[in-house]
Amino acid sequence: MKTVRHLVVLAALLAATSCPGFSGPALTPIRVTGTYEHPGSALRFPEAVGSFRRADITQFDRSGENIGVAYNYEEPDASVAFTVYVRRQIVAESGEVASLGRQFVLERDAIRQYHGNASEDWSLEVEFLDSDRTLPGYAAGFHYSQPFNFSNQDVISFLYLFDRDGWVVKYRVTYAERQSSAEHVFADFLKVAPWGRCTDYRCTWERL
Image: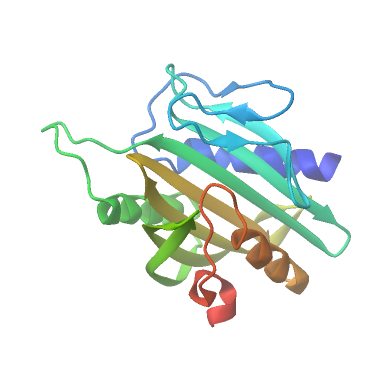
């Protein structure tokens, strides 16, 4: 349980420091038993998705439109932190909505700013699937060093961003580079993620 809690804290820190436009009150935990439904997007977050267990739900604004839901996979050979963020699109002072591509650039910059030793390995446009429709999106892979599972480790981290009916959905995934089995666990989960799945081999580290 301590390891799981560590992953949750990590996810919350990433959320607070890598969400462009974040300027709300202190992070507010949402405590709920059973499936949580986001009031704005109607996206649903069950307590478990496959072998991933929901660990925490965090609200980043007063209205509850900007949230993060952390899921963790915990086995002796692999620990994977998979966090789903949902928020409104970024709107400039002029009232113009920032393009998804521009928002993706801001997200990438935020990761490099927060993790000073982060190196971006690749970034590209990808497609996410939701039932019978296709959602345009972006993906990027990084590696850097940070405390993970109670020790400083080299980690692999991914960023995914896509638009879903006017809501921006972001995935952030992190696991220890030395845990090669974690790659397959995460890749399999991405193919069935209920909020938007990516089956293209280019979505994961397997493309390299």
